[in-house]
Amino acid sequence: MPKASDTLWDLAIAEVKKRENPDNDDDVKPGEVWEKSILFMGHKNGGKTTIILRCLEREESPKPTLALEYTFGRRARRHNTPKDVAHFWELGGGTSLVELIRIPITSHNIRSFAVVLVLDLSKPHELWTTMESLLQVTRNHVNKILTKLEKANPEVAAEIKQRMWNDLQRDHPDYALVDPFPIPLVIIGSKYDIFHEFDSEMRKIISKTLRFVSHYYGASLVFTSKSEALLLKARALINHLAFGYDKSKSVSVDPSKPLFIPAGLDSMSQIGPPPASDSDLGKMHATTPLELWKKVFEKTFPPKSFCDLQDTKDPAQDIQYTEYEVDVMRAQKNQELEQYKRNASKSWKEMDFDSDS
Image 1 (cartoon, rainbow, N blue to C red):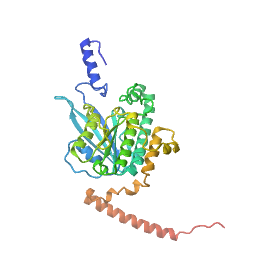
Image 2: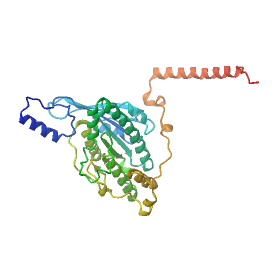
Image 3: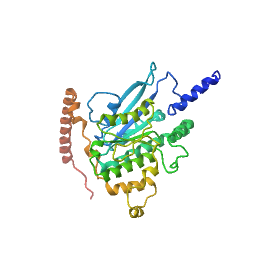
Image 4: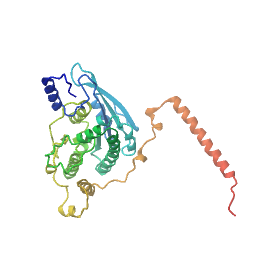
């Protein structure tokens, strides 16, 4: 906010800085600490923890994420400036624990929140189901927050909604065809090393579909693996969200190579139509472009009937969380519970019930 004492030169400098850093919050002033929050979600064992550790430059072995885990990183944007803080949340359990997203995403941090969706490219039959489930629940939750904000603080709500379109100018040919995600979104396709061994036609369908989905949601897209070079590309996108680092302008859309497409740098004309014959497309009934792409994708990769809840292990049985005193107490409580069940069963059988005459 300009002050009455500001000279024309002060205003000019401020305007240049604003243009150079359009994603900076207006209320983040020089010398103040920038705080951002990012939620990582996606396939179980998809590589989320590995990506987080790499972004934070931590040399640790990744451990399975139980439910919702938190860590943070600190980094200075410039020399001799306070270190900014990035809050990293990680949702475990694939889609089974998606309701937990309500914990990190709140009305207090919605202005500075972003989502990273990690999809396992080696599991195409689970890809659309996982993506759709996680994004729908997250979007619904964010929209509820925005609806409340419109009443409590309409200026902030309007700012967030306007920011959705920052990466897509009004003169973009796809402006009327897309439906941007309400908060910044990065889609990461992990395990590219396995994906690269797929049949070329399968790779083409998956790549085109994820390009469409990312563009439709106004998201950035990057394919990665344990390769240091590919992890660095994913890290660049995340560091832009977390610490305001410069946004990469490089683009890679060759389906025979790892994709790297920052938000707003793709187009429907470059992506092309859904990978299906004209006769097949004519038989598919869809109300939105997204629904049409879903039907085409699932024709090639029918969704698996899987239940994440059944696969979720009981953390109490995990040896990495062993604590002697807690485990002894738990064993004692288990014995007491079993005794209670036996006593209850015995007394239940001995009870007399009045029968209707």
